[in-house]
Image 1 (cartoon, rainbow, N blue to C red):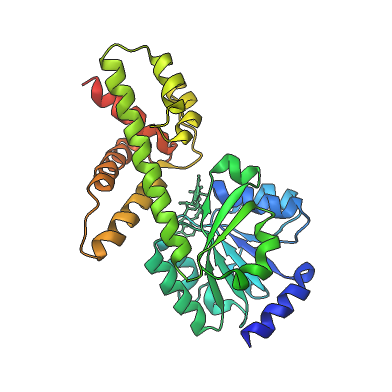
Image 2 (image 1 turned 45 degrees about the vertical axis):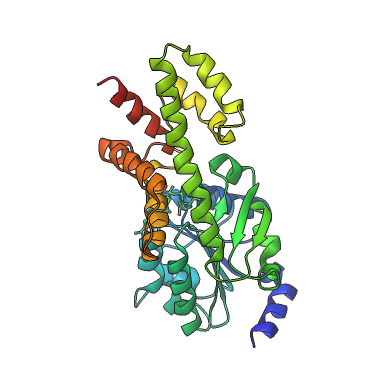
Amino acid sequence: MRFGSLIFVVLNLSTMNITFIGLGIMGQAMASNLLKNKTPLIVYNRSLEKTEPLKALGAKVATNIAKAVSEADLVISMLADPNAVRELFFASDGVLSHMKAEATWIDCSTVDPNFSREAAVMAQEQNILFIDAPVAGSKPQAEAAVLSFFVGASHQTIAPFESILLQMGQKIIPFEKVGQGSAFKMVVNMLLGQAMVVFSEAIQLGLKLGIDPDFLLNTLPKLPVTAPFTAFKTDNIRSNEYPAEFPLELMLKDLRLATASYTDAGKRLPMAEAAKAQFEAADQAGLGRADFSAVHQYLAALSTK
Ligand code: NAP
């Protein structure tokens, strides 16, 4: 049955009904790129005002989640965290209860692999195919349609949807098994969070030792010992302004999910836990909706105390 339905989807890509749920920083840019490529789209977002720019690009706006998904062959979600996905999809009157049998749900939200596996089971109960496909890249990469998708499915399973994903990104990395796209995303974001804290601490040390701040910000990101993405965060540090590309509260969420995934196996990740503590403190200091690089602002303030 499933194989037959995949062929059906391939043949009818141009007439596929697609619904996009979650129009935050990333979802907004991703859905825009689908519309700019003339892919018809129904969009849904909890806060209605975020649908306006997409309406201007030709999207149909659904104010009701049931109406948004009842005709969809493909639902793409880009939501904040597992709780948001759970609330919208698993509730008794949620998305899964309204989707057609044999439709597909691609979840691009960053969640933990256990959650993706749970979502796959919930979807299968409704005869819906679930694929975890979190993305690498932030707001600029989403806007430029150069994201990478970490897909928890085989190449064969994702193949019918590749042309859709490639309107939003440039790379699709299949990991064969459900949940493994989310698993790899945990690994990548654990590195990201730690590297940001490590970079900030290195700057604090350099400053305390009397090294010129501009020299530090210009030179450190180019060294082989430094994570290259830090080069994109030096303007924030210079200006002490942190407009959100990747909100700090979501970085904290990823470090919580990553460490919890490991704790589940009875182990600890001491460095990730240390980084998480800094993001937790920065979040409590009110920086949750700033860019995650604002952890630097928090650490810099500590060093002056
Ligand atoms: P965002 O701007 O905070 O958007 C979050 C989205 O989730 C919004 O549409 C929000 O709706 C919705 N949402 C949150 N809680 C909800 C709930 N309880 N019920 C219904 N909707 C809810 O976040 P983002 O930066 O776009 O990130 C989206 C996902 O991509 C996250 O999992 C994030 O970790 C991941 N990601 C982000 C980046 C990045 O650089 N930003 C990069 C890679 C992956 P409202 O608009 O109503 O609040």
